[in-house]
Length: 203
Image (tube, rainbow, N blue to C red; front, side):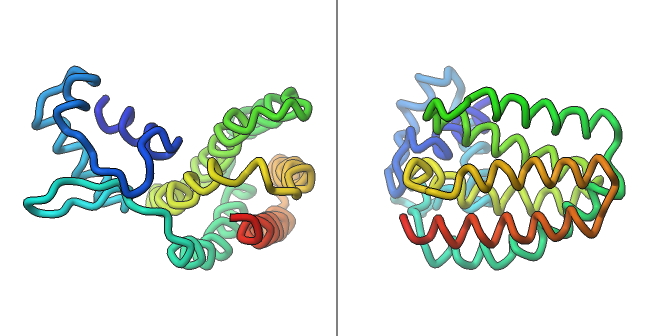
């Protein structure tokens, strides 16, 4: 519980980048003891979301564009590969979940609810990773996506490519449903490269 709540607060910027984490306050808020909280912080440290400084405390990892660029290099290779695997391996239930997520995204209808859009995008990427049926790849993808998720909250409302990105999600799910691995890989490569190139202009 402590891990998931704290991770969510960090990813949604409810705890600011570079902020010192107040362990006593968190223990009271989350109603957990010191040991579960420390275990959660250790796990978040392994995911590069916090930095533990001996005798000084724990800081939320700062936003770092250099790190984002490095993560982007990996995403451009690994996410298209995951899309290919998903097209080859996705079950009907997994395809149905992706299609429902698209319907939920379309239902926003330009309402400007960027927080909900981010959550739906995160779910789309999680569903893709799950459909690849490779737990080692899924773990890498989740860790990479977490690194850019906080930047989504900072600047997504200024990104002008959202309609194209949503259309690419539709293309991707159609390719996966058709078990067209080449098409799925190509769409995801275009999606990741195009969206992150646009995003880096505005953050």
